[in-house]
Amino acid sequence: MTAIKDPVLYLKDTRPGQSIKRIRSVCIDGSRVPAYVIQELNGCGVCGAACLAAFASGGTSSFDTSLEHCLDVAKNGFTRTVNGTTDYYTRLGKEAPFVRKCLNAVSSGLTARSSLFAKRRAVKEILSGRPVLLNIGFSGQYRDHTVTAYGLEEYAVGPLGKRFLFFKVRDGYSKEDRYLLYRGILGISVTYLKPKA
Image (cartoon, rainbow, N blue to C red; front, side):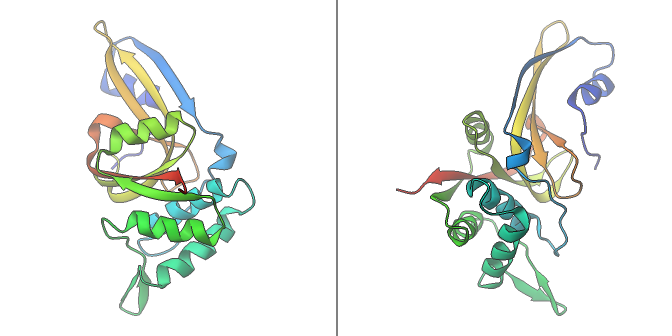
């Protein structure tokens, strides 16, 4: 699967000769949503949770410190051992409880919820200035993977202005910005931040 590094170049390649007009671009401050590279076996959910925890801490907890906390939380009921190695794969439905415990570890005033109405919820949260975890079953870029979405870009393409929405993501494979095509995502849930009641 090929990463999308630039939505405009992607659209030029997939819609050659058609006009491309950016309609909106929203991005949460990238310094508050740290880039990361996954080192752990199936650690995309753990790294994504650490990224949200670092964001939620308001700068009091670095990504590395948040990751240490999240790894400890994961080892306490959210992992399994495969051939003597810790497997950090987060099972469907366990994302929000796991992220909640990670947030508690960094003394955040936030909690986490998950929703299967993922795409709309993710857009709403990003527009409100909060990154989200997207747990993706399949897309043109990822399979069975969790990414941290922290921005979006929308374009009108061609004479009829067909809309294309992209999430800006930290995918854990590279520290570079990557993009995820909204309409190409199948089998998805979103985990988002929410103030504690």
